[in-house]
Image (cartoon, rainbow, N blue to C red; front, side, top):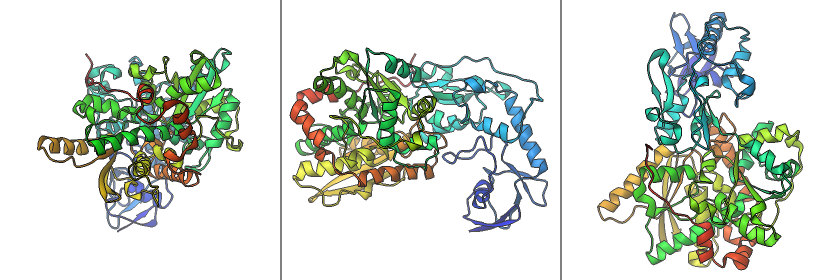
Length: 581
């Protein structure tokens, strides 16, 4: 432990910490723009400068390590003026179009400008004249608003290992751009949206599709059906000042009905459906030897895109099961349409998702039209949904809980934990155990696969049979596992794992690229805790026990991996070029 002082107040903090963390221990907030707790500090913006007492030296608090007996001054008149000048210089190259910016009200630069009372711009205004990049269906880049803090580059390269964004040029001509100066859609980008989630300003943001949603609910010829993803229910409340991790499922159903949608379903239903298909697929691979081992989960579209670009040799290992969102879309326009006697051509299927890559997924290939129509017509992120609720005058915080609609709205606890890292694995184990043994697990809490380590491995005992499993989250962690599998394959050795879960974003979907801003590990943990609370209070904890799942197989799908389920609920994968030319 290190003993030091912040503004005269004694602080004890672990060695290796930075001054920023020490200040927070005594409730002193030092402003930062380039720093984010997910990323290594690199002291780019200069906003966090502090004074070392009895020294002329200025330190950058985000990168300066604590040392024994260090005494730091974090705020005085001189530091105030330095920070204000830094902000004024940043603003001299930043447009003032706040009212039409997607980050209006959530912009970190805007907040600091207000806090420091900046009312004029003393420096010459020098704005870039670069066009927006709207080449993807998921993310928009607006280089005119970039402050070159480097967060997006760091998260893309260090946290995700994708290298779709980089610094190009020198000095005043430096820009953050897709790799090789290509349009974003032609770069290695996997549309995960972590760049937008970490950008402090409006330089990178999700493609806004709220207008199309409003048009749909205003059209009497459209039957609007909405599904919500597991992770949305524990994050949306933050936009309405509810405690982080608050479960808002019933209020979301209520809000959607007030917005004017016709039916409210839940992606959790199809998460249970995914477990039935993917779990049966795993059992088949393990017991018959038909199909590559390990089986790798395929729920995350950013991960599937990454695999097709960087590890196409792993395509045989991928589960052919579609993501829950796409399964729900296909079932909505077939099973539900038949049950409700509605022309599927009139159904407008909307998904509220924590992920920007979901906007890409709905049209990624012909398998996403298995119903004969686009299985999902529109995807809104959690952030877009929050804006819609506010614009519609709905007081979300005081809404009463309402139930989902039937017959594809009920879910088991196993489905809701799909939203966090390890959750798909845990849900699959709960059902695979029953499929293999014919017995129910005595304890459905598979704690061995829980946690926040980037890669977690272990064994699950299925009545004497050891099933080796691995969980990875954050794309940069995945290559270690895949290289281990490749190595075993090349040596003719037994695969090191039987089943692998991968999620592109750290923490899983709870921290997806479309979730509320300012996500940290503390916030991830609280959202995950909310999902496990939802699981624990569920009447049914295992997917195979969901009565509506049993009903859909009896009425429509026949059994997991049937011909009909293969057509509607499964997909294929294709090698993609890392760089499009």
